[in-house]
Length: 315
Image (cartoon, one colour):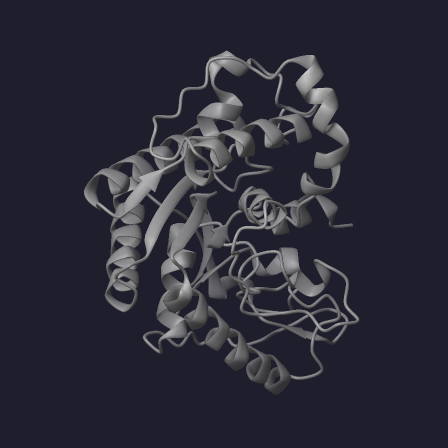
């Protein structure tokens, strides 16, 4: 099983590992590195958070030589260089653009191994908003300014993807994936974590409603269109009326450890255990006893690496 997507997708990955399932990892950390260092082990390969559907399609196209973006390295304010498409996978940065390129080659080989070697690919849709290069349309996980890159501001533009665009992108990705790995099944989820900010000329609440609604429509339509694709309702489990706000942190954005626990228990029962194939039915929130029993265990699982939060951490 392999995973990719937004911050919430990391919970799926960690649950699969915790339950000793055959979780596919194609980029392994050196023996001296701790888990999560430089994004080793966060996802199946070190691609960082893949927030938009266009990012996922672009990653596939780059891995197979179908697209070569003009942007190859961004220079940070400290003089170090980063990969524009995964700017936080190596905290120390690189000494030169050539080092970025050398590391990228091995990474894209690992991405190909993920797509060709997985039996199940789990993708969590996170955002509709993104940033593109004006010259060739390449998409990035964050705006260059958030990364601190020394680049021309007019070389990039904001884009909020429509349902039609995302459905087209996701359909193309699935067709390409199925072509190289016909046995692979795909599981789609929508992240329940709300937007931290928006570039639209609207309140972030309105932007979040559009984003999550559009992503849910895309996931549902695509799951119905492809017989090897299924949808897991993590969004509904966390934010549905049956849960109230019991699974949200005080900021009403982050998901609590209890919410992660409950969603992943439903995931495990439905897809990994004896209940596989039965409809998911979520009617009640977990009892206080269930929450207390699992709080300590889930403390480490609830921790995720989220590039988007860099927006809030800039000086």
